[in-house]
Length: 376
Image (cartoon, rainbow, N blue to C red; front, side):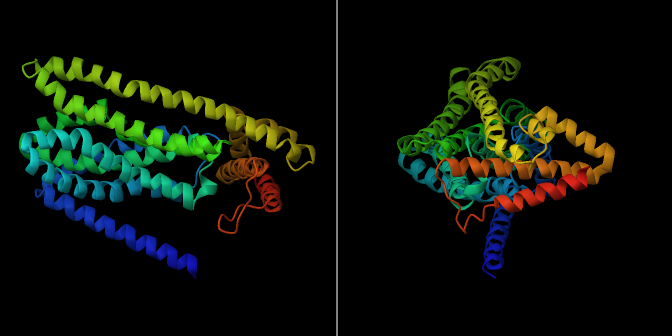
């Protein structure tokens, strides 16, 4: 009953934010044509962005319900809260310093803090409430990226709708190029930085680093966000007001994107590569006992730490048993991997609680045996 009540409360809260965000969009973009085109342009690249992010989650894939919740927090909760606070604080600053300076301060200083805080709250809630699904740095990057993609999607609807009302399809096309082609992973990068820091705190054995690293990651996310807003929104237009539009769009702004987001994206990819190696080692080390006791076959044990070998076994199961065999083999890999991570957490001194409802080792072994029979 408690679980049902909790799900009902979350559902009502989510519905409330959906209605609030939809109302804000309709008020901000009163033209149905503009709203429709803006929504289509903002939503179109999302499946590709999400697909690319999920490729980072190679071994211990996160539950779909948690991934969707992270995305929706960014798309509904963080965007709505940020829109209200940015407008409110921006109006106060504009009243004190004038409209032009107020817009500059709001975009360069206020918005990055407000937005990264609103997005980061999702990651903090996941870490506290769904700790068993937040294992390490890689999980933080995946969750943070999805929050950022959701946020960017809704924010883009607002921007695209407004620019269409002012500049038509040409204006919409130019802004799509700037915000999607050049800066499409911006918000994902910023929030993934916070997520990586929280993920590090989750897996590190140092209490000092667990306290120090998250604020540093959060601060770096704000700094990256502020740099993009300040340079793209204020510095370039003021320093290069008479620059040829072609050079601005196809030379200057791509270079800006390369220097402002390139290093961060490369760093996160390198962290992901390192995390894959660590996860592979965790799987190999903590499933060795299962293989020695016959709970896993030698072939399964050798395949589990390798994404390529896993794929080969999944293809083999598909050839033998069709889609059912493929799904069973994939699920076997996931159950075994979760078992490895559970044993890893226990080896580090963590203890399961009733609130976390960690999968018991005996039940995991029973599931593996049943899935093996379905895939064979």
